[in-house]
Length: 629
Image 1 (cartoon, rainbow, N blue to C red):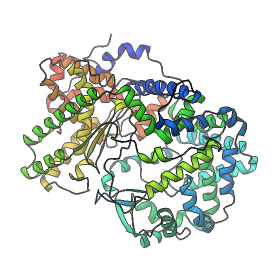
Image 2: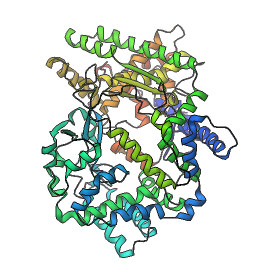
Image 3: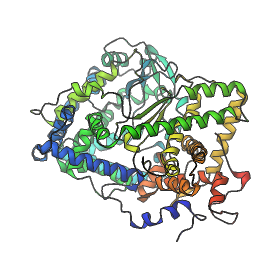
Image 4: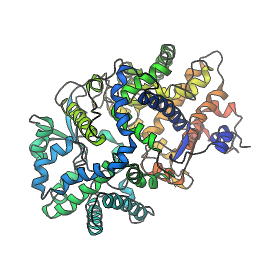
C-alpha cells in the first residue's frame, strides 16, 4: 500500500491505477478522458437514435444529425473508397508554378486545403476589442522543432511512420509507386526547410512576445513567388492594410523557402499534407490509415470504431448544437448558480490576497485588482446557440466531402468577415460538452463549459471540501492565468499593455524563476519535464490550489484530507510511454502525476494533515517552498 507521505498521487489513486484500462483507441485513461468518453458515449447513443428515427431530435439538432448521417453512411463511404482524396488532390495536381498557386491560393484556403500559409482573423493584442489579420507559420510534420535534432531518438521512426501513412493514402488514390516515392521524398525536403525557422513549442508559449505588426506591403515583400497582398485581399474581400506576424524569423527567410527552385518540393508537400486530411472523409480503411501517424505519436493501439469516427466529424462541424442538447440534459440551473457562487468566492479570495500583498507596490496592486474586477465569467454554455450553425444547411443528396467543403467555406467567410470589426466578447471557444476550462487574456474572461462541471471535478450534492479540491482549484487555476507570465502582460481590457512598475515586474519574474527552479530536474517515466515550457500552467496550478485551499477553509465542515485527496484524484492518469514522451515535449501542462504531487509540497496544511516530515518523499523544506499568489 502506497502512503501519502511517499507519493500523494499513487496513494490516492492506487486502486484506480491497478484496475483502470486504457481503451485501445486512446493513448491514456484519466479523470478527463474518462469523463469525456462517458459524455461522448451518452451523446453518441442519442445521436444514433436520432439518426435512425428511434428518438425525436430537437429541431435545433437537425444540421448535426444530418451531417452525422452522411458521416456514418459507411456503406457509401466504403464504396466510394479514395474518391474524396482523388478529387481533392486532382486540383493540386494541376498546379504548374508558384504563379498558378498564387492565383488559386485564396480559393484553396477557403475550401479547407492546407496551403502552408496559416492566415486568419483574431483580436488584436494591442487593441483587444478590434479584429486584425493574423499571420502564423507553416506546420511541420513532426510535432515540435525539438524533434528534428539529430540526437532525438524518435526523429527517424516518426518520419518513417508519416511516410508510410502518406504513401499508403497516395497509392490508394491512384498514384504510381514512382510518383508516391517522389511526392513523399519531396514533401520531407520542403519540411526540412522549416524547423530552424518556425517557433518551437517553448517559444510559442511565450505568446505575449509573438506580436509583430507589419504593413501589408512590407509583409508582401517577404515572398516574391506568391502575391501575398492579392492572397489576403481575396480572403477578406477587402484591402487589408496591416497584418500581425507571430514570428518574424520565418518570414525573413520567406524568399528562400518559397524560391522558384523549390516549387516542385512545395507542390508535393501540398499534395502530401492534404492527402491525409481528405482521407478522413473517405472509406473506413483510409480513415484508419490517415490516423496511423498520430497513433504512432501517442501510442494508441487502434483507430476509433467507425461510429466514433462519424460522431467526431459531426461534432467538429456542429458541436455547439449538440452542446445545447447536452447542457439541457445534464447541467441544471441550480448547479450553474452554485458554481457561480464558488467563482465569486474565489475571486474574492484573490482580491484579499492582492490587497494584502507584501511584495507589490500599491500602484501595481490597484491595477491588478482592477483587472481582477473586470474578469468576465462564462459558466456552462453560451446564452444563445451561435446562429450561424442553425442557419446552415446540410445537403443529404451531396457527399460528405462536398458538404464539408461548403461548411468549411462558410465558417471561413464568417471568420474572415470579422476583420476590422469590433470583437464579440460573448463568443465561446469551447462547446458546452467540453471537458476543459480556459482563461482568455484578450477578453479577460474565465470559461467553464458544462462538460467539466461533473464528477469527479464537481457534484452539486457532495461535500464542499471535495468540490473546492476539484472544480474550486480548477476555477482558481483559470483566475491565476490572468496573472501568469503571459496573462500578466495584458490589462483589464485584454490588451497587451505593461501595467507593472519596473521594480514589481522584476520581483514577479524572480518569483516565476523560483518556480522554474523548483520544477527543474523532474521527469515522469524517464521523460524529462521542461520547466520553462510548463511555467504558466505551473503558476496557475500553484495559485489555484492556494486560493482554493483558502476558500475551502472558510467552510464550517472543512476537511483538509478530503480537499487534498480530491485534488490528487482529478489528476489521476495512466498513459502509454509514447504519449508521455509527446506530452513532455509539446504540452504546456506538466504530466498529471507531477501536477498532483508538486504544488502540494509548498503548503504547511498538506504536511500537517498527513503528518509529513523531513524523512518523507513528499516533504519540502520551508526555505525551498515557492509561492506567487
